[in-house]
Length: 428
Image 1 (cartoon, rainbow, N blue to C red):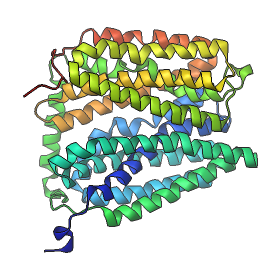
Image 2 (cartoon, rainbow, N blue to C red):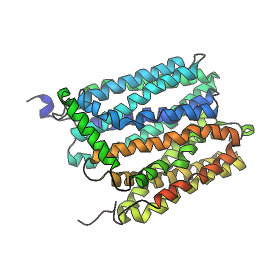
Image 3 (cartoon, helix red, strand yellow):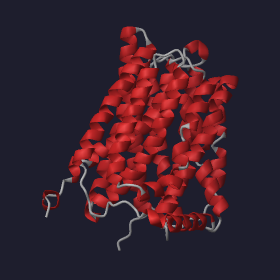
Image 4 (cartoon, rainbow, N blue to C red):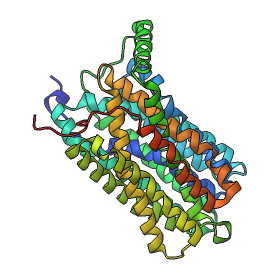
């Protein structure tokens, strides 16, 4: 018997760092890139279009998740992807000061997006293989907490670091180059650490490549069974439209906060945006999610579906006020952003729970992965045109449009089938 088998590694040695490594690249690709490109002077039209395309790896993730199962162990995929993520971040750092920084850094963000989506597949699969049922129940809150910490670190601390460097050097490109280099070094450490720290469960084995034809046939059958579900059109409409307004809003919040008053924005510095949107906002988002999970577990999703719909959409109206009033008080701006983020965290609970509801039954894991693909598609497509629209109608009218764009989600929610007790804890 090997030493590893005699003394299993405690999940505390690898789960916190694993989910830090899962959360950081996602928030860098999806949110930090927007702030960086705004500092580079890229137009809102181009920012929204090209960074929305970065959702694509998460949209098609269900199609290549079987490759991770077949080729190599999930353990190896994890630390190799972390080293590749570090390489992609290093590429962003090296190309940020170049004359064609937008084009080159965007190419490396594409690499980061595919590596990050692949890492998600391997990490979540490894978590299930390397922990017992009891450990899975205990550490589900731990992994969520460290994923949130990663979001705060990326959307808050890294942005604030870039802001401090920008203020000191006067060179926004150089500031972001250093910030990305820090992240690249962090992922080098992650990769080396997990190469040693991750346990080696016996069940984490490569698939049999000779079974590829059989595996493909089974995968297509599983995929097909998802689209044969009753009322699949209504279900897909809900998945695609639940965040139709939010998908447009999220791409324009950071540019709005950063743009000068004469351009319709609030004129915040990069440091202030990191503090407002990346720390205070994320804390409010987390609190909203915790409350949402608690009330849904107590009373069931059907009881809370419409309050959650209202919570995720109505607070978007604070940006109408901010766009028209353009207040200078950082505390007022923080309060408005915190309200919107709290509502989003509370309301997003319904979306996650309904994806679980859709996926229930045979092939639950695969069907949930397909749901997450449609979730990403529902963010990608509306986000692509949001910058173009804002550039043409201005921030005040754009935020009014965002509120109007929430109407389809209410229409879709009104038609979905849902049992009264779904999501509620029962005495049995």
